Length: 257
Ligand SMILES: Nc1ncnc2c1ncn2[C@@H]1O[C@H](COP(=O)(O)OP(=O)(O)O)[C@@H](O)[C@H]1O
Ligand SMILES: CC(C)(COP(=O)(O)O)[C@@H](O)C(=O)NCCC(=O)O
Ligand SMILES: [K+]
Image 1 (cartoon, rainbow, N blue to C red):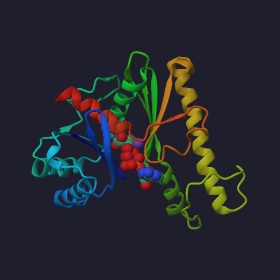
Image 2 (cartoon, protein in one colour):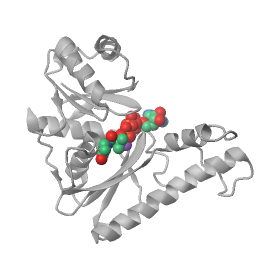
Image 3 (cartoon, rainbow, N blue to C red):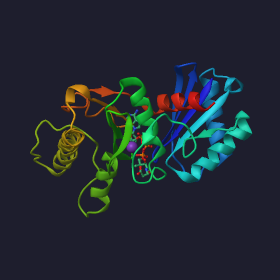
């Protein structure tokens, strides 16, 4: 078995693969202050509850956008799994040609998403990841990662409206029936929901223009904890792949083991 660990700013997602099949996945809150031993005790308990023998894990691969937790989880792998993890970054083969100003600064999760999307859908492909931030990753027709966009995440935007004002409450993400809100909560929900929907579709149209390709030849894949919200409702987001990053990690593991 392979253990894939995707460390995001809000959640840490773990996936256990038996050959190419994801047999279990767990989601933990990202906590910069938890120790190696604390994370290990949670993970081992979850493994046990899912009847997974940690001794059967032959390798671990980690993608992290939280630098301090790379150390915590690498230590966890050595101490509790007896394995030196592959940490996605410079020097690790991903199969993705990165054509941006400074390949070292791009979030590992974005390259992992691109690797998974190319593998499953071919190129050109766009990945929209609704996590703490909402990111767009663009792979051109030559399978080159050519960059993308970083937008404030949905929950982050809702929080910012609340913390940056005296009177706005923190609302739940909901689709209002009408775009014109008739009270404060409905107005915020409409701003968030229809604002994001228009932003996503508008950005995808601009990317298509810039790539100079036809929408018929391009795949647009959605992922991330909040990714299911706009699928179907959007003109372009039709495919939701909740485990895209984990699948990308498995593919990259196989290239490097
Ligand atoms: N299964 C789920 N259903 C609904 N919301 C979720 C789910 N998983 C995560 N979320 C929410 O989605 C947001 C983004 O999560 P995630 O994609 O894990 O972010 P990140 O990768 O930045 O850590 C978080 O606010 C989280 O609370
Ligand atoms: C853009 C991100 C914050 C997204 O992180 P997430 O929402 O998945 O937690 C992360 O990929 C990151 O820190 N990237 C570094 C900058 C870059 O990608 O250019
Ligand atoms: K993201």
